[in-house]
Amino acid sequence: MDHPAPTPVPASLEEIRETFAFFDGWEDKYRYVIDLGKALAELPAAWRTEEFLVRGCQSQVWLVAHTANGRMQLAIDSDAHIVRGLIAIVLAAYQDRPPREILTFDIDALFNELQLLAHLSATRGNGLRAMVTRIVSLAQAATH
Amino acid sequence: MTDIDIRGDFPLLAQSVNGQPLVYLDNAATTQKPRSVLDAMRHYYEFDNANVHRAAHALAARATDAMESARAAVATFIGAPAPEQVIFTRGTTESVNLVASSLAQGLVPGDEILVTAMEHHSNFVPWFEACRRSGAVLQTAGVTATGEIDLRDFTARLSPRTRVVAFAHVSNALGTLNPVEEMLALVRQQAPAAKVLIDGAQAALHVPLDVRALDADFYAFSAHKMFGPTGMGVLYGRRDALEALPPYQFGGEMIEAVSLEAVTYNRLPYRFEAGTPNIAGAIGLGAAVDYLNTIPRDTLVRREASLVSDAMRALADMPGVRLVGTPKQRVGVVSFLVEGGHAHDVGTLLDQQGVAVRTGHHCTMPLMHALGVNGTVRASFSLYNDASDLERLLRAMHKTLTFL
Ligand SMILES: Cc1ncc(COP(=O)(O)O)c(C=O)c1O
Image (tube, rainbow over all chains, first blue to last red; front, side, top):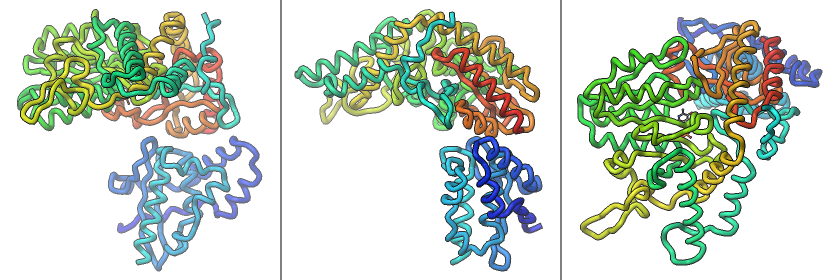
């Protein structure tokens, strides 16, 4: 197999935004993020290898990407629930989008709006920022 | 015993995080600073700032005096025979690097260095590198499933070819208090040619120290883990061990005379302190030691120990929680994992509740590998933590478990 199946997006951006709008505390928010993480399909073990590892100090993220018909196809997984939930949000923004759209999408603004921006900070060591940087540079390469 | 409250001495602890009063349980990473340390450093910059050991003016004399009194205070605190056996460094990491790179110059292929699988990367990688450069062989003593150094393996790996032995006094990842006296005796017996370095980063605050009685060749620790500033540390050495050591860095302060043809090096401790030192850092460390001398340290250490054992028992009783490392003797640290949840999940959910712990491999990847885990959640206590901190941790853990 050339590529793993792209990871299905558990919830659309609209759904995520609407759900977040109802939350008034950290508990609901994190329960939802964890639920998103639990709903995320696992990347088959064959792809969870050193080659596809995006290093975070505390949790690990695996990312396999390719483009098909001019759209980015992403297969992503992590070993931590909350990170998986955050990956679901990233996928809602990036999955099956033309690279050009990925380059213009403001992911920081989205995470800021959801009050999850701290998780995108490189110092969190969760691999999320490194993953986003990698997707963006793949999108850049694909537009050249 | 729990009546003593030194928390008020630490201004940072009075804040809220994520809307809740901060519970700071990441003390093994770094401790907070008492006001007296902050004041001493500020006072130095406001009134005494000048370069040390060089000028004839009053400020320089005050700065030099302040720095050298700090050295004397540290020497007394650790039981060093003389202040010049206290070398100021940037921290434990630089102390180890100083010894490793200097000793490496005398190593030849076939020599051996013995470390343990429990070491912080700072007491592992410098030796790994010393071996790579010199052709010496790195031996690593294993750890048991309880998270203790396997003393039989440690002994078996000692030989007449062993030139250096380096190990932690207290494990930063698990809290294991190693039997350093026994280990030293084993080294002296089985590998008489070996120099011994003890990494005391996690011990200096919690374990009463008498380096003269302990009699290791070198003992390293960091100011920031004992209420002092970052960027400041100590290398204590036996006089003969320090005198036999070639200089580490070269430049100003560490020389006695320089001509175009020849350079002679300064005496201890300056021989190992090239360049303008971290004067404010030294003064801050001195103030931290002074602070430790004014509080009832033994009582607070006992309170901390009972908090740690209560934490251990309470966490072990929670469904799905597994302690990582169950050593007979431990100091300051409880490491654990939660079934069905990654350490990172636990750390994030505790943070949301104002409880600061550390998650991950704690810069001890060989240890994590030996124990078969990717990382742990680590709650680490200090002298200012009290029963309310433990209660908040446990309450936050109960809530966290409902998420996973
Ligand atoms: C056991 C141990 N050794 C060495 C170090 C390194 O200390 P520093 O980073 O202050 O140089 C640490 C700090 O985390 C430690 O816990």
